[in-house]
Length: 143
Image (cartoon, rainbow, N blue to C red):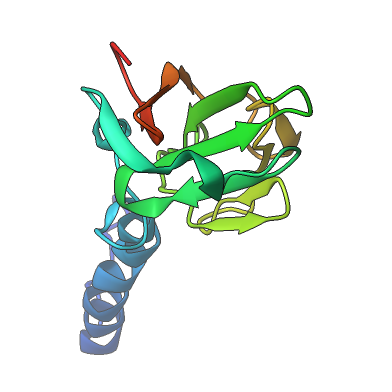
């Protein structure tokens, strides 16, 4: 006589139904507005970020509204990077000194070089063009 699967109990079915929506929350945390962003959130055109004086030599400034970080080297040169994490596409919203910290999985990046300083990310941040126009920092493609 062939084995027959036993019917699922009401409790088993209800547990599965209750757990299914919760399982998706972990994925939603990386893509939900406010918690993360897709790579499309990187500027697609030049954006004015702020006054050139906002970024002192050897420091960095995070422009959350545009998903950009700008750093200034000791020689005064500016560098800009997208703050969309290369691990899971989350918007990085924390700058501690010159270290960017991703809220989703804890990846850390050097805001001066874009390089990964702590996994799980393995790829550096995307570098953006940056220049100063009439005392304002402008970054993005074509800047």
